[in-house]
Image 1 (cartoon, one colour):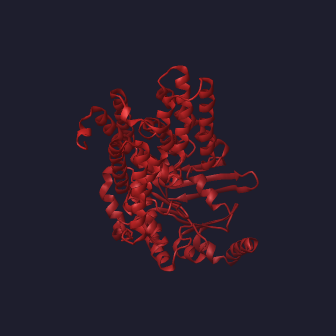
Image 2: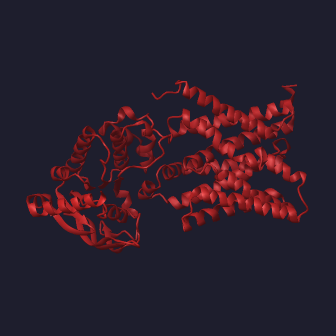
Length: 272
Length: 240
């Protein structure tokens, strides 16, 4: 039984998409966590809920409207935050609740909750199509290339905005780029863990990795490894025991974090 | 001598206070300029304006004869060391990572090792920045500022909260950078003795510029030194 599941093509698609999403969420999430923007992913995910509802109402593929609405609202809220000097956590709260509010009203207009809505709320990784997989792989590839090309600028403006500005880095543009990439990453990842659990993939593996890694690259690699482990093991375990993949993936990630904290407090992860 | 910086009639008006009032001075190549003045004298505002972080000013700032409003190219020639670099304590970057961030041209890889050696932080290169002492961190930030071979080094009260031994080392590094590598240094400080020992020019700022010239001239004029001390003392009393 346990080996047989690896022969199913839906399982291949789920694992390939899952691994791509794991890598993407780790990397984009690491920058968000370090910018004290941990809940931004959550806020974008909630606004994407509005986008999904809009798509279902309009009869358009909901992920397309989700991409549009999420990216637009993430950029708008960032602009408003800078313009009116609203704190990061307050702007996240505004974005988060407005997305859900819009979603609920639209769902009401379109006649109530359906099975489609639930699959977006809680993920449906075992149902991804070949087209979905190709889209996920392409977006992951593009975002990773952008991050590799602008690695120094993104890291520097995350580390210290003022110094990055003095070094001639276009910090504001980089900030918008991060927000834009976070928007794409969130909507792409909805199929894996759903709207409600996205920020877990952004945050938990990174919180663990920051405790282990010394340098930035090491931290990123550890985070990606934890994330891939959680996703692959989560998909397989949930299938074998017939439980929800999203919840299993996130619980595994939390298990790794708990283990990390245990190792750290036992003194095994001391400073050199 | 080549004029590196020309500041003319610089005025910065904040909503409630005039931070800088009609400040004018020049910095020549090779100068080691110590800027002194009490808290709130406008030193940080002056630096922010010079570095392009504050663009709301009246008057003109020129670097290498070019108005900084027109082009940001001059920033390539500047290494900047802030008062206390703000970053998350557990930010996962090593000393090496931090210096690499500053490096504009990736092909200058061996420059990193060179600068680590020069500032006595080679052994720390794989340590996380947040684990180091204040003095060590400050040396890392100087290393970062120097990694692109800047012509000018700007330091904003760089020894705040650092132990005496590190301060001595830090000053000897500054002296060497100025005398051997001919780097022009603009440095704000509270430490009058250190300015006396290191700087060859002094600017006294208290929203307006009330002295700018050779440091011998400043320190041989008891009246001026007293005035500075009074201004600084008043500020001190004001704060308590």
